[in-house]
Amino acid sequence: MPRPVAILASLTAEELRDFLPEPLLGQARAVTPRFTVWDPTGQSAADFASALAAADPEVLLACWKTPPLPPVLPPRLRYVCYLCGSVRRLVRRDQLEAGLVVTNWGGSISRVVAEWALFHILACLRRAPHWTIAMHTEGAWKNGGTETASLFGRRIGLHGYGQIARELVQLLRPFHVTITSFAPDVTPEVEAAHGIRRAASLESLFAENDIIVELAPLNPSTAGLVQEKHLRLIRPGGVFVNVGRGAVVDEAALLRVAQEGRIMVGLDVYGVEPLPADSPFRGLRNVSLTPHIAGPTTDRRCDAGAFAVENLVAYAEDRPLRAVITPTVYDTST
Ligand SMILES: NC(=O)c1ccc[n+]([C@@H]2O[C@H](COP(=O)([O-])OP(=O)(O)OC[C@H]3O[C@@H](n4cnc5c(N)ncnc54)[C@H](O)[C@@H]3O)[C@@H](O)[C@H]2O)c1
Ligand SMILES: O=C(O)[C@H](O)COP(=O)(O)O
Image (cartoon, rainbow, N blue to C red; front, side, top):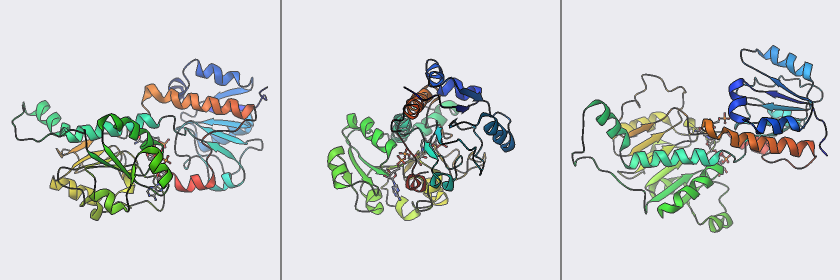
């Protein structure tokens, strides 16, 4: 029997529509008669603190537009169910250490982000940026002078082997590729169970594969980890895709390498976002650019909503939660 926990849902109208379309909102409301929605649109940190004090919730259901939690939490707050990914902007580490339970969207949207990595890989191999510019603006047609390549049978290197990388492995299987990963948690057991290889080093990952996909998290130990020396190990005609976080890569070095035109580059994320209008990446024909839209797509935010509702029900029934952010997870995730 669920406990009648007080839940404050901090969601804009758009977030409600996308993350909790019916029947999910009804299911969330059915968890407890004490379910209140607060819209953070245009609200200040002080407004948020007042809303928390008035509702005095045991559970906060939060989303992208929710302001950071105030340093002093409302007395009954025990659980923050975050509908999205990185909780750093919402929750302070000391609040976790003090016992606040926090979950995020886990792997519920990872396949959609993996889908966009696959898009960039294919766009790069087929030289889609070149042909998009040339056909839309130059009246061009194929001329035999622009190489194209297929994904079938290629060697893929994954930097990072978390939830998105694991979904990408599934999407890549039909292409009969060889997959190698470099990440601290790829053990021989994971290697055997997933049918992937382990790279001996970041250098060998870049040197021994045709296509590199950047999926390591951004944390103090990974900022700027991918340097010019790594990017220059990618062989001519190779592909570098980043759908993780821009700041994991030395972006100035990436620009230099991209401008030489030896490799194809697919980017969804950047060191500075929005990407400045005058960024030299814009207009490079060997670079596929998208504006941080890897995921989750509007139509699949409901997957994160369904995952969150399951956690809310589990919490009210005193069952274990999924995707709990421990201090270690907090430190090592984006
Ligand atoms: N572009 C987008 O719209 C979008 C959407 C969702 C997530 N992301 C980003 O994609 C990245 C991956 O997300 P995820 O959900 O797979 O993350 P995750 O937390 O599930 O996995 C991260 C993995 O990175 C690896 N890792 C940890 N420390 C490392 C290190 N020092 N060097 C190399 N690898 C290391 C580990 O294998 C770990 O499992 C994150 O940065 C996330 O923020 C981007
Ligand atoms: O890039 C991402 O990770 C997604 O767009 C979600 O962002 P978030 O991690 O800030 O929720």
